[in-house]
Amino acid sequence: MKKTIAIAATLSALGSPVAAEGIIISENSSRKSMLASKEQFTGTVFVEPMFDANEQNGHSTGLVTFTPGARTAWHSHPRGQLLIITEGAGWVQEDGAEKRNVKAGDVVWFAPGIRHWHGATDTTLMRHIALSYMENGTNVAWSDQVTDEQFLD
Image (cartoon, rainbow, N blue to C red; front, side, top):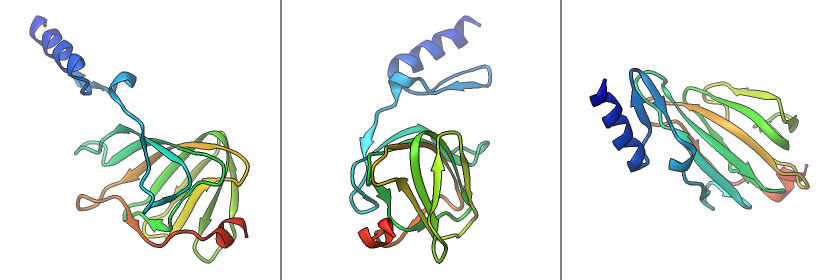
């Protein structure tokens, strides 16, 4: 037991997820937010990786914050994506369909292979937790940017 506690304490000090007796804790202080890539997002978007995919869970998890007017590029996920809207209001759109409103408390599922985008509205911040499911080591296929006309339409 003392050995397990010592290992957990060492991992915690290193800023890695802490594992002890089958529980993994990704401590808030160990995760760093970063600005999202301008190649894959428009506007100011902060991404905080929360948990990497592993052989048990099969998905990566991140907290994403979109400032007003910010959004993803068009993209799809080989095994789908789940969004849990935690704050604000935003828009989601499947290619060829109408843009839809989402707000805090909503949960959105994008089926595998469905080309879509999501982000804040033009006036409101939106934050969500994203679970993106892995297939053959990847969880997303990026495409072209969402134009201002598409975003505001």
